[in-house]
Image (cartoon, rainbow, N blue to C red; front, side, top):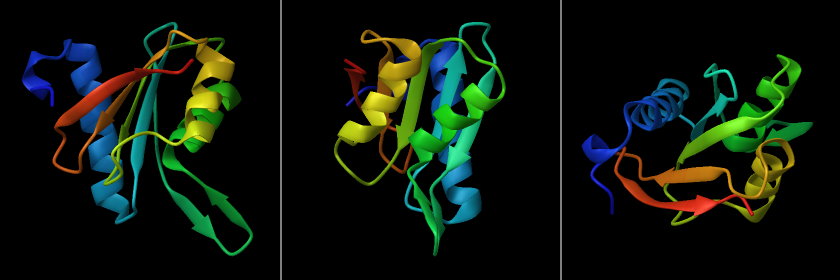
Length: 117
């Protein structure tokens, strides 16, 4: 596990935003992504009868819809031990194979960082 205080301030910010989205909405996951200009996009799990999206895929979709051309980093706060493969694929589609994805526990502790590739 990584001490979240040891993270780069911009990475700590997206973990904090992801954690806040999860808590505010009372959903299984919260996520945030940072685009190539430093803008952040925050999302939570979407669970409607006709639409189900993970928090990370929703955050990537929000970035794309806002005109982002690439991603610098992503974070997901989840009870799961790792990020879902489809979530990593969405990050890879916009950010490329080397885009770091910080996977954090509900308390904000970063479990590990994985590559979107």
